[in-house]
Length: 313
Image (cartoon, rainbow, N blue to C red; front, side, top):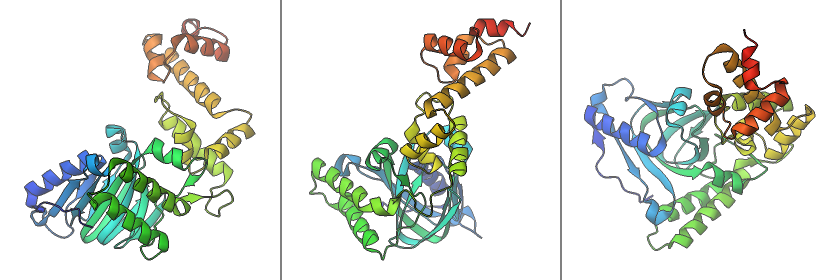
């Protein structure tokens, strides 16, 4: 892999610069310095990919830090929303996400989700390339299939070997035109598809009650986000969009109807328990159309939002 760093940053000042570059490229992460040593022994660099040339965002990340992790608070703080494909160039890493632990050696790949908590543990100097893949682009290419998050793609496998070659081609071949770079990226995702998706009936597919529990938890977490959609819920819950709709249909409702009801009930709680005006309450819970909110509220509770508030007297 010929994506070259400038000189590695070193020591305390270098650590601060490296940490800032990591946040700019990949999102907010908490970082622990090299294990059993002082921060003065830090070495590392983050080199952003040239998106204008290779048509993909990401970075090469090198460091001798022992632990890099991303919490729910970090996720809420920077609101990043993408998948990232990690290629381990050298060194060893332990990737933890989605209740799974994956050991990465040189040449291994793994798909991770920046919108989920994650942990990386390293031993010595680690060198990785992280390609940022916009969520909607990935969901469009892998429609109706459950993504395998944090599942190692072995460097020695045919898919692993060819994928690493395509990543190298994408990053290093200066002869590629824009159209050719996009074609290489499409070829990479098509090649990875069998390794990154599970067909219906796959042994790793979670049970319906477990998927439903996860889906409802995702909805509660993003209830205030007006862009919440079935595709995003299905991916976070580890299922396909089709299966998600089927699960909600078992309970004689739909994904959209369930989201609407949860938002209406949260608004009703706020209307009764606070003196905040009704319009800001509706907007804060993801309603963009106030007329639609008023009609839906009256249909759900039998009275208008204003009349509902008057009940507390």
